[in-house]
Image 1 (spheres, rainbow, N blue to C red):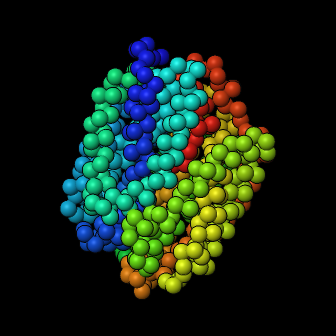
Image 2: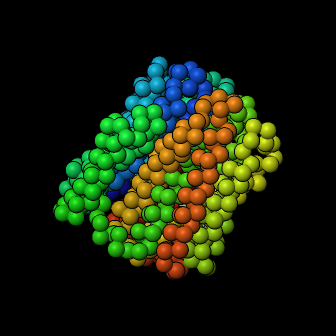
Length: 487
């Protein structure tokens, strides 16, 4: 229940929850267009560039569920504020990094702060505005979240070209400082049902996934049969198996395994992880192609990708109209098939001399496919879920997608390196083609898995939980309707 009945003006509430969330969403992709500049300035290797993205993503994914549990116990506004402080300080540390390892470490802390900002912003919004204003407020929140993802490459390119790569992180600092007193003024404190905190589950899952990603990233350089690679790979598998064993026995598990008895939940999470692996690993490769091979500036590369990144925002409106009529499975399958076709088309076109106009149709196809997948997957994840499991199910889906992003960047980069790829105009394209092709094949597999999602009309979570006493559950219900893409 909210501990403070005071109502701040709606605009204050929206700014207080949306700006921090916008920064966290933005920093998923804002760095991508800056990678060639960071490589040149810090002398970073391809492996270090990979970790610049994955450090944020893995930290973010590992801590989403724990952040929600901490917020229910100690107060949502308090944990949200702490997350913002951590994110702001980490952004400052990113901006003053003089070596690649410093930037990677700072990105870990940035992801930890972002893990508290993204899920709690929606929950706090639902408890801070009158019920009659919630639909409009959550719609605005969803639009801001989508813009953070869509504009990441464009904003990153513009800032890098106009100022420096450090400025993409420095900009977060004044925004964070402005938001801190606003959060205190505009957002009432609230709590959920406090449970025991599953720190053992957090460590087992987090270290296990890190071991797998580390082994994949180091495989080509250190040798796949080397101790440096085999130990983290095998250790990662063992730790994840231990995580499953522990979650079966924990009194308050981080991830209740009984949720996977729901076929829709299981299939939707597998699809979310696999399609994120394919599509975002390919995006990582393509951004480098546009700059290194075709000579685009960071800003120009951001503009060039807009047919891809902006399409989901437009398609999401159409998806909201179609899904209630035909159900989630046909929409998800169609979207994945379009992404598969788009990515394989891009792989077939990759050539140093390819024109931008030739790439645009495939970019649009992939973007439309993404728009058709994001929101329906969130709906499918919640199909048949008990009200008390809605928030955990939604958080699990976000975690699965973020882990897919990290594995995708690691795997496709490993394929690129194994094919003899180099970060040079002449040594890039031949190795990028098999990497992007594997991304397309991965999406084809995700399409097949999507047929396992039960054929059903979408769950009307907003109606089913309209009278739910818990703000957390109400927020989970609203999220289905307002969900925007996150990476």
